[in-house]
Length: 191
Image 1: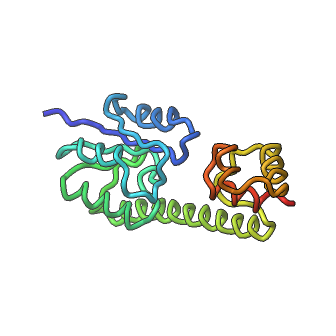
Image 2 (image 1 turned 120 degrees about the vertical axis):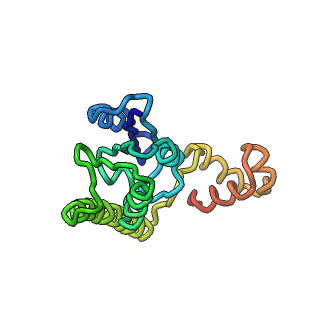
């Protein structure tokens, strides 16, 4: 019976290129047709179809290859859970070129250290995002997706509204927008 190396790669942002992430398992001896991927999902997200497929594909004595632990999972409990499930199924787990041995105390330590740093990195990212959002809110900046209306359209909508000749419903029809969008545009566009 031959044993297979199965790889897993992940990019957290849709705009990131997955090529480099896929190349890493190939460089570690994984066949390109045995690499499962997730694109646009973070390591804190447990619902990842590519990871589920990779875990389902490995059989006893096979090896799951992940270039970096942060690609597999960010929270330490998630990484431990995945490693424990692989061990229960007698599946080897390779982190880069290093094969994790859960029976070795040094192996456990070398697994937990990168897992802790991956979780720490995710926590720092969340903290910076929250801080940035707080600063933006304090400056009156809009959160979330920017409106699609052009400034000229917003000014025209405001001008038409101030004439008193157009109701919000009429403006919604003229600008092919919903009434809530008209209200938000009026709120954002100064008089």
